[in-house]
Length: 116
Length: 111
Image (cartoon, rainbow over all chains, first blue to last red; front, side, top):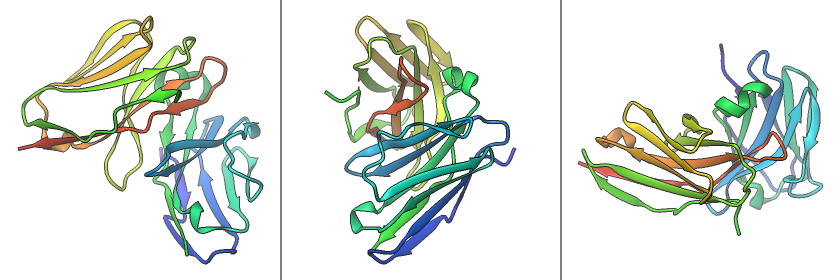
């Protein structure tokens, strides 16, 4: 089990540029979650998918953020245009839905995004 | 009112003592509760889960749940310097599959 794989690990970009974060969930997991973590706001849920379908995107801060899950093994979170206040660590997590009740989620290593 | 509330700390505990971490939640219908540990610069890792009122023990860790008071706690016995981390309380929403996290309590174990 390779775990949840995120790329890139670090991203530094200039304000106004497009940023794409990538996630490969654990094989067989059917739920995928994108979280953002900052010192001020802690760990915030942005969006989650179940069986590749977006279920709740109420945490997406604004229209500059979008997320897709074209298949069971891949998801992207895109920010366009990026702003300095988007600087944070972005985590992807996955779970097998029926097990999440008991075992919670498995997190990826995160992407540290810095927008200058 | 935040959905999941924790004291941000830092909580400083001498090595070998018991560390007590507390959490309250607002969704009375919540059924699943988790404690995650996060080392600086790392991702959260699950250390305990609890679903029924009472205590659940796993090694040096004990999770306590009181649904009537909407209160969850984590006790760490024989605290070690390696326990120094941020501890995140998490609650599974009653109406959905998502898990809501508290802001975390920073724990420091002093030798």
